[in-house]
Image 1 (cartoon, one colour):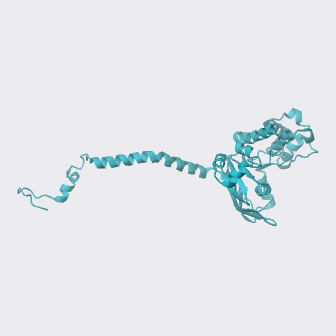
Image 2 (image 1 turned 120 degrees about the vertical axis):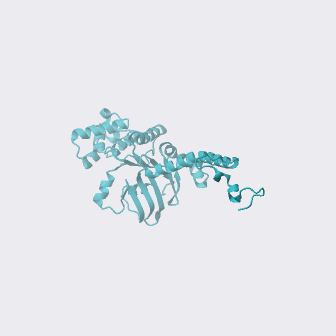
Image 3 (image 1 turned 45 degrees about the vertical axis):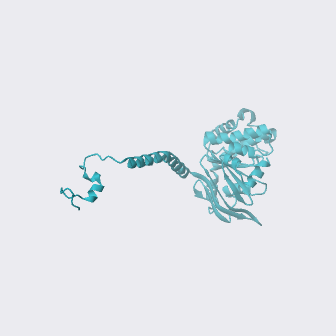
Length: 309
């Protein structure tokens, strides 16, 4: 407290320094120009950053919420020599993952691990959320029913008709009656753009290479699997037939929401059909990302790999 030089009421230096404290409790406070500018700047900054931050949070949440239908986690496998060394990747529901790489890098081995025809020396393999490496034979067989397999060269039974080939997994693994089996076979052949009335009774030897591949796809999807595995589905086919098979794999994803893993040397088809590409090199996955990310990569090996095509 100090005395007023004019002899008036004593003044409080602290109260003079905070004139806002002198107003009545319900009286609006007028902020200074500096205070208003600071608050306006903060509001503008939040307005700019909030949408970006919100989008990133939503993208992460969407990714975490999506169901991993397939996952390999730190998988190691060796025979006489190492084949796979710390391999990890996953496929979300409805994704198509292309596995590419040079010959002998272990691409087809990954399919055998997913089918549990092989068990890794170390690491985990998940199918539809279930870890499968320690399952007994009966439980592993149940897991395989969720998957359809399309082999290189179609691998049809030469002595069986087209109908018998496509119906085979239905007779082995379902309780459908004959009429239901025929209806399912016709449905799948129609899906792969083959006329059931024309080819049901034909043998594989009567078909072109592209038609055999399509019958192989029809057989693979006969049991309505949620996962499709393909081993070199376009190998040995002409460009037009390759485009047809690529279109069918895309069709399965878009219309039926099937999750697929495609082992392929055909990088052009891989770019067209896949949501992600895994590139194997030196027993490891050296790249895992979208076709656009792969095309834009400055990695020397990827540039050389793409340059070979």
